Amino acid sequence: MPDSPARMLRVVDVVRETDDACSVVLAPADADAADFAYSPGQFLTLQLPTPAGTVARCYSLCSSPHVDEPMRVAVKRVRDGVASTWINEALAVGHEVLALPPAGVFTPASLDADLLLFAGGSGITPVLSILKSALATGSGRVVLVYANQHERAVMFAGELQRLAAENPERLHVIHVLESVQGLPTRAQLASFAEPYASYQAFVCGPSPFMETVTHALRDVGVPPARVHIERFQSLTEDPFAEVPVPAVTDDGAAAELEVELDGVTHHLQWPRQTKLLDFLLAQGIKAPYSCRQGLCSACACIVDRGEVKMLHNEILEPEDLAEGYVLGCQSLPISDTVSVRYS
Image 1: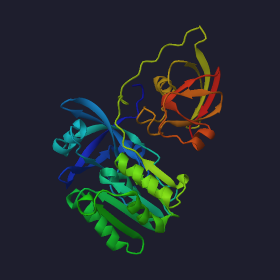
Image 2: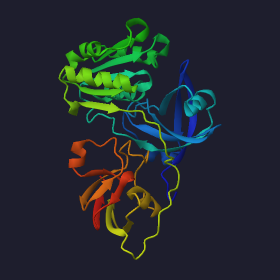
Image 3: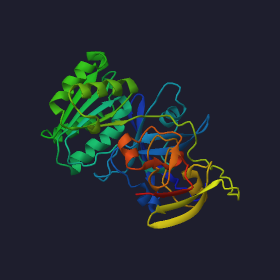
Image 4: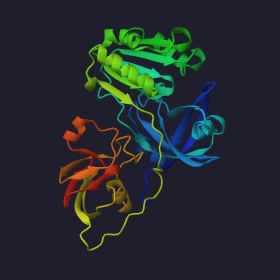
């Protein structure tokens, strides 16, 4: 792909967290370090050379950019999971993997806010990043409700215990174990959430768990604007693959495009059947992206003039759309003239 933002990351360490999960410490080359600066709760998209073929997967960062530690992702082995099995069984120190820069919007607007965090299983990964960052640089209280099948499945148990001991006035951790209390119920989760209904809520885990938490938060009066959800989605396309872009012809099948990115304005002929991101990358313009499937918002931009249509969107909320945000990876031109900018 012309001028791809993908870069190699070196595996510095692999740490066994539970019987079915490990964390992987990754380091970019010095020249690429600035491109891999990240915010708490973001994720990496990795290209993995598994025995079944090269696959792309998104994994949340469980490290914090505020406590001077290297980037770390945590991966739980899933049944028949090609990538998660390969990482847990074969990935080793010294290996290199291709990665796109960090992306995602599952991150607090302010680390000084009071935070109510819900995690289920491996959903602890981005939540832990937020928790550590808030304790390190913020001033608010942090409450974590962490659900697992049994005690041996609790990822980062020792680290959570240490953080709670070091921050007794600011961090409260509630463990929910299916083997002891059964599956978390809506009423049970509501009882945990009620004392903290004024906090910003962040939720990550299996879909049934997140749905139950969302209903519980609604039951205790937490408005949707204060509920932030991170969904683990499997990629069905390869975000690292080069996408062919048709040449512009004289038959009028192109829109006049003005793009503002990194302080530079570009004027281009945008083929009507080509997605905005694909077209910009083909022109050598470093537009941001990650999943290329409408799942992550890394490619979001604002339409200042004209109209586009999105083929798919699972991340932008109605208020985002009202402000003019669209996903570059899913946008096609409708009007003859379109002006967009990347903020």
